[in-house]
Length: 114
Image 1 (tube, helix red, strand yellow):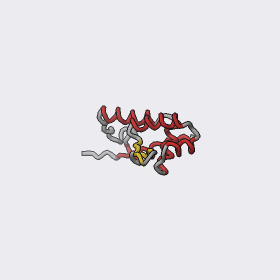
Image 2: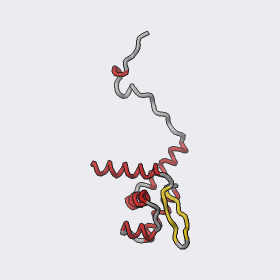
Image 3: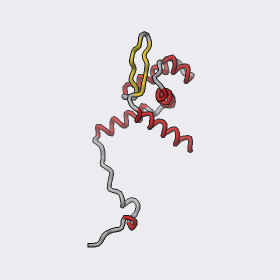
Image 4: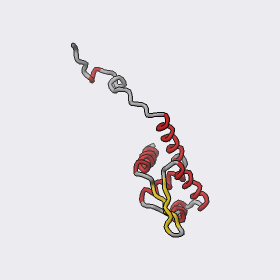
């Protein structure tokens, strides 16, 4: 029996095929990526990566109108990227988890390398 040295294989032959997630998982991932596809939503995620924020703080930080921030937050919330928690008269928004921030930070870093 002969042993194949992995160095003798073509680079694409060396790795086993990656498992394919379920259609539901792929659809959910697509929803998340579509939700992150707008520049203002990317900026919101970067802001929320630092700390939870209310709408008026996002308006001040991003220089975008309150209705537009609210619209983008609705998209992010529907996709499960952010969640809001009411505290008194304000709603504080935060990222659902750090994975989403990593996706955005990596995309921004890649774009800056351009």
